[in-house]
Length: 120
Image (cartoon, rainbow, N blue to C red; front, side, top):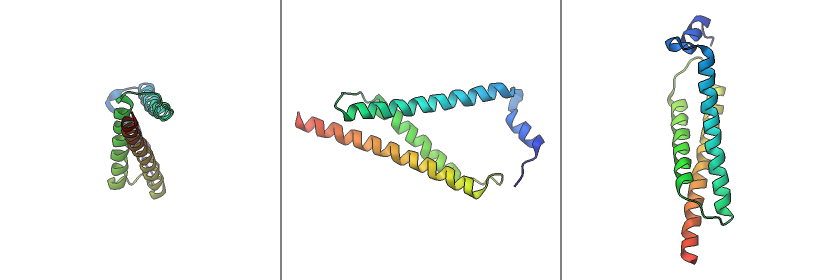
């Protein structure tokens, strides 16, 4: 389905904020998300190699997984006529894959910590 250009401008220019400000906010959000995921990945990798890490990265991983799960549920139960079913399916699969990856990281880290505590 097609979206009316005037409607799109009202949506993206909500509250009178100029478009560059919205683009900057979206870019900052993407950088924060990427940075958090990179931090979780590097911390999990270091812990897997034997370096002691604190629980903060696991908290970040749980928050990111919850965000992915909420996004997947929103896609699953959303009723946007402007997005094709294929786009919705791809977005759902990507979010569920990211959720599964983060869940595996948290599970593996907790198991590794328990294993290292029993061997000491």
